[in-house]
Image (cartoon, one colour):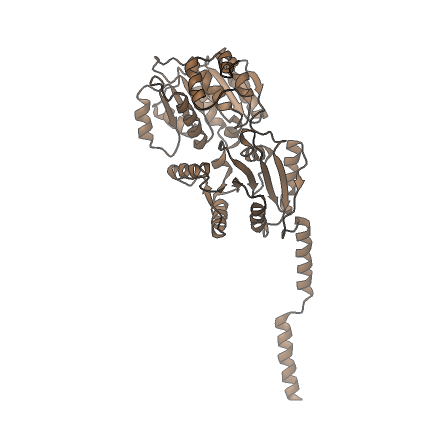
Length: 415
C-alpha cells in the first residue's frame, strides 16, 4: 500500500493529500491517526499531545476537509497562547492551502496593525488564528463575529491557563455557538483543563499522543548544582562541553534574558534574546535567524518561547529553574523534536532544592546530577563560603593592627 493512502483511509480528500506530498509528508503520526477520524465524525476532542507530535495537522486537516468555502462567516477559530505559535500555525495552514484561492486565512495577534486586521475581517475570512487578548479586542470592537463559528480549537490550552488567560478563553468561548465542534490540545491534562472541558465541551473523546516528539522520560535530563555566583561560568563550561547545534536558554525575567545574552555575546557566543519587550518584527527576525542556524543560542523567557517548534534544537538550558512542573515539561519539550535526541541541563543553587524536588516528584523521576569542571556543588560551595567567613572573622583587623603599630612606634620614640 502506498503510504499516502494512509491519509486517504483517515477520510481526507485528495486535494488535502497533495500539499502533504509536496512537503514530503507521507505517513500520519499517531496523534493524527487517532484525532482526524474522530474530528471528521463531528466529535469534540481532548488531545494530550506536545508540540512536535504532529498535532497541528491533526486539527487543521479535519477543519479544511469540512470547511464550506461558500459561506461568508468565520467558520473556524484557533486560539493559541502566544503570537509565535499563532504565526507557526498560520504558516502551516498556508502551506496546505497554497494553491487554493477559495480558502481565506487571517492571523490575529498583538504587535500587528489592528486597523489592517479590521480591513481583512470586513472581507470573507474562513479561518482565524489568534491570541486571546487580540481576539477579545476585536470582539469588543465588534469587528469579528464568532456567532456562527463551527470549529473551535484551543491549542496548548494548559499554557493559556497557566499564564492567566482563563477568563479571556471563557469569554471567547461564550461568543461561539453552543453546537460548535471543539478540540482542545494540551501537553498536560490538569484539573483546570478538565474543568474547562466539562463546562464547554460536549461528550469529548480523550486521545493521548506520544510519538515523534520525545517524551519527558526519553530526553536526557541533568541537574548541575552550582551557586548564583558560579552559574554563568557553569553555563559556558557546559555549552563548551556539550557543543549544542541549537540551544535554548531559559531565564525567569526579561531583564535576566538581556543581561545573560549580553554576557554570552561578550564571550563570543552566537546568541540572541527573545522576550515580550521586543517588537513583533524583531521577534520574527530572531526566530528566523535561530531557525536558520544563523545564531546558535536563543536566550528566552517562558512566555516568549512557548509553542516554538523548531527542529534541530539539541539542548535546553534552564539557567533559572522553572517554578512548576508544567513549565519544566514545556521547556525541555523544545528539544528532542521529530524523534531526534535531546538533552536538558538545569542549573540550581542551594535555594532551588525545593523546586527541583517538586519537579522530580511531578515527573516521577530522579534527575541525574552532573558536575562541571570548576563549579563546586552547592553544598560544597556553601561549606567553602562558611570556611572563608570563619577565616575572615579570625583574621586580625588590618586597620586595628596598623593603628597599634603606629602607637607602638610612638611609644618607642618616647622610650
